Image (cartoon, rainbow over all chains, first blue to last red):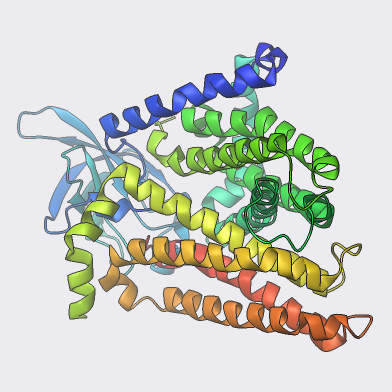
Length: 145
Length: 165
Length: 159
């Protein structure tokens, strides 16, 4: 992308990149699951035996492919604020249940059920193939069927 | 240059194309279809030629004949793949340019993968005159194969390096 | 249903899908597999339809590329099965996924039909309409398989 890279001869470009690969793999293993939307096998990282109810304030609702994402600030027992990310179905599926991009707006008071990530990071899944977990926005429950 | 890239990404992400696909209730699978169909034609035929240069597989045709057979649709596949890829990019351009795996994917593709691919396509005419290809052809085919596998790997790892914009 | 539960709780299935390097490898193998499979079949079909590689005979081209259809299919099937197994109970009731598999099976059948008949069609000078149509169906089935493949997560949220 930078202009000097185009001036580099082909072979040294390949060699430089080849060295990155073992580092990349190491980084991936060390980082674990990131703070954003899960990849292809997202459901593997979530604990479906647990359902927690989060109460807080929405900071944004991403009406986006491949997954809608709800971001919210949740106060824990000590009063500290955690920024949670809830993975949801794509717009195609949520809209069929009656949701829209404005179903949750920044600043809305939200209470939402979620299956949290196994590794304890503030990430959870709140809708999938056959379900949308209970979501209450400003006191009004959003459709789950 | 970096500043330009960020500004470009911000602009692309704000276009009706980018926003439209991002929020669409129906279009996203078709964009993915475009990208993957194009790649099946492009990467699929690349792999077939690389393997033939390496001397692996059937020898019904010489490598020269195979390169000639595959040429047109190989590049049609590239065009379709890039179109789909750009459309995907446009939905979240800022997160993509900040993503190291995406950066690696693109820099393996351009110039390394493409340049080597073009060289191999051209050289296949001389290397592939005989059913058995020379050693240099086997090496070149093998390196190109590794490059395409690396591009696919980097692409698959993109979600693992997604950062909040 | 019990088999599906056994599958997705199986130690190997859980671990191969639960670790980033192995789960990513399954995805990579699946993509490389279907790129090879669809690419090879598409080139053969396009040649039979008369829109590709006109300087080479359809039979010779098919002989050269068709084996990669099988290689790609095996790679895609093995990686696909291992990924499917991690969510087997979900996929059991997923009609979009079932449709994808049916399309894949039909795709293989039509690819084989084209391969089996290309020699006969080639001998007629120009490929007859029935041959071109069969090749078109084969190509369309594979494009549909890819579409249904991306439809599974997009329309049903699985995978």
